[in-house]
Image 1 (cartoon, rainbow, N blue to C red):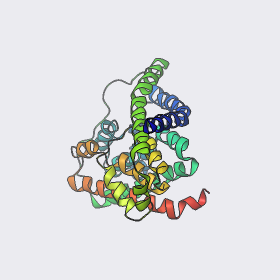
Image 2 (cartoon, rainbow, N blue to C red; image 1 turned 90 degrees about the horizontal axis):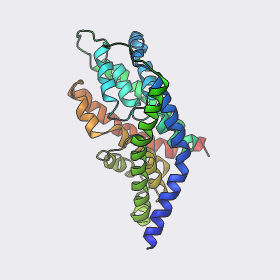
Image 3 (cartoon, rainbow, N blue to C red; image 1 turned 120 degrees about the vertical axis):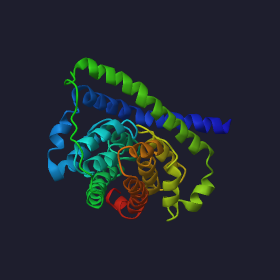
Image 4 (cartoon, one colour; image 1 turned 180 degrees about the vertical axis):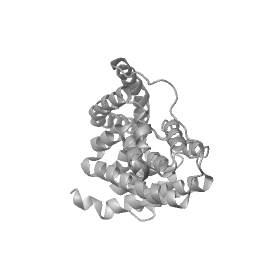
Amino acid sequence: MDLLKIFLRSFYDYTVDILPYFLVSVFITSLLQGFTSLNWLKVILKRGKTSAIYTGILGGLLPLCSCSMLPVANLINSMSRSYAPVLSFLVIAPIISPVTLLLTYGYFGLGMTLVRLIGTFFFALIFAYLMAIIFVKPMGLPSTIGGAKQNRSLSLFFYYLRDNLLGIGKYLFLGILIASLIKTLVPVQIVKSIAGSFISYPLISFMAIPVYVCSGEEVPIAKALKDIGFTLGNSLTFILGSTGICIPTVLATLKFLPKALVLSYIIFWLLFSIAMGILYDYIFWKFFV
């Protein structure tokens, strides 16, 4: 009975803490979906070497999870002469969005949100441009966005608003459920023995690989890790690792990226999530206390 009370209390607290941020983020997300068009890509990809910056910004603005971003990523890849634009998009899209940033702010505050935003964008561009030098894309026939221009209207906004409330909401609900179970069932003694140690960061990063999270689901789970004794850096490692290395996404990218490049993508995420967690605990936190 005590465990049930702890679970219900945790579930209530997590839900109340994040609900206002979730509603605001869904509203912003639906506005973007209802009144924007992917025809922007034609303009963005004509910007040459700076196009990776713009596809990264696009990835941060569009309300896409690690799986729903794949059609857009495939389209970007088919229209560009370099791998840099699609890699920048692939790294940024699942990590930065109006939903994930507002949820991160709701649970962790401004410091973690800024590190998630700026750190991901900065290292995504470094990775994208470096890989574009190592992996030269073979020249192919240019591709264009087919079909007539899609009409964007208020009715689409309400359609996406309902779709996001139900679609994203169920994943957030699942994340809060998992977070409440973690806080209730995981022994604090086990956590204290490894929390903040150097082995904890790669351990969390590797453990996050098979954990499929979507649309901000990782944030309440990361909050639960913090609540049971893990450090903020450990939580950040989980946030980045679980959203960056999504097994279905990795397998799908093999359809339009070289195998060696996909392997580099996986290695980048492992090292990036570990490094950001360590940097947060030993350096970044000092700027936010």
